[in-house]
Image 1: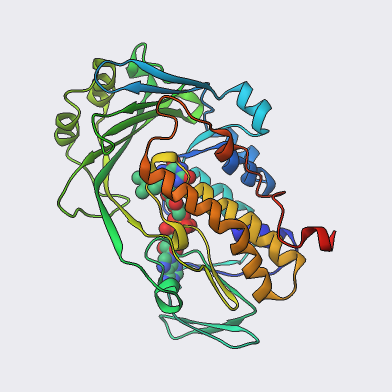
Image 2: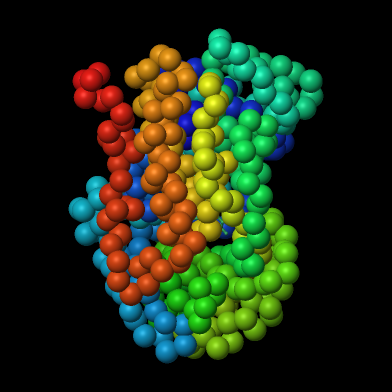
Length: 364
Ligand SMILES: Cc1cc2nc3c(=O)[nH]c(=O)nc-3n(C[C@H](O)[C@H](O)[C@H](O)COP(=O)(O)OP(=O)(O)OC[C@H]3O[C@@H](n4cnc5c(N)ncnc54)[C@H](O)[C@@H]3O)c2cc1C
């Protein structure tokens, strides 16, 4: 949707084909770091999001058992001043609604599952499950970690189960006593696979809780599967009392297995390009999965605006984006970023609306 809005705002007509029958209010919260919010502001949806979000004052790292604070990074006014955009914690559904409202009327075709793609030197034809065919100048495949288009047109490394499951829940901050809900707090666990993250959403009235634990057996990937609350509490029984206090207030956590794919060699083939998780799915430990998709959208729209040759525009997009997304995929897997030191600037200050595109100086 972000790519469609960015293209539409540049006068390029778009159509979205989505397999779901409707957009539903599922999932929990999403952390939109300043680089992601900058893209959303450029799409004209940032103000709408701010109303339903919460901007944390600090980013805090704490040690799971002792509670020792190992990092405190100012995120509130200082981040706004430094990066030009805040960090926003929002419900996923509010992000989707904000994007949906900014789309051109009639652009979204629901219940439209793509099953095949053909391309010639002049255009791309998509084949939908219901037998419909539609022809376009180009195709952007933002079809997620299981991308059909990637399987059809690109090398497709196997999906790898990370050996971890993630829990997510939302609870009222009023139940938390003195817990520091105004900050984004990451409790670093005894292993890299164990962690607990808390951050307020919805004007500070609710707390988003995200936790991961090791689960060696292959587990189910789902956005709406319910977790056993006792399993969650048992897995964090050794954590500091303040962390356990948060889990004691959780009531209906969701559980999803975490999967990743190895980086792809290429993201474009002729008039087709991949975007988002379709080309760079990552573990969510830097909160950069959706952020990378948003950055992709802005850069791709800029490339297509300045170059009528779709094939070379797609190549320019990948040239700008691949190195950054791959670096963040890698750093997310390592899960050490901002544990006790580290620089947030290389992630947060990226401006997808102004990052140079190859050949910029020639066309300026
Ligand atoms: C537990 C967890 C927490 C996360 N937290 C954060 C966070 O805080 N911040 C952040 O930036 N990122 C986060 N992420 C990552 C983020 O959720 C993803 O990177 C992001 O959703 C990817 O967006 P996407 O549009 O590329 O793919 P998706 O969100 O997967 O969307 C793909 C869409 O394509 C549709 N589709 C698929 N196949 C077809 C087809 N054949 N035909 C038609 N439609 C099709 C799907 O129905 C879906 O609507 C998190 C991920 C997880 C698992």
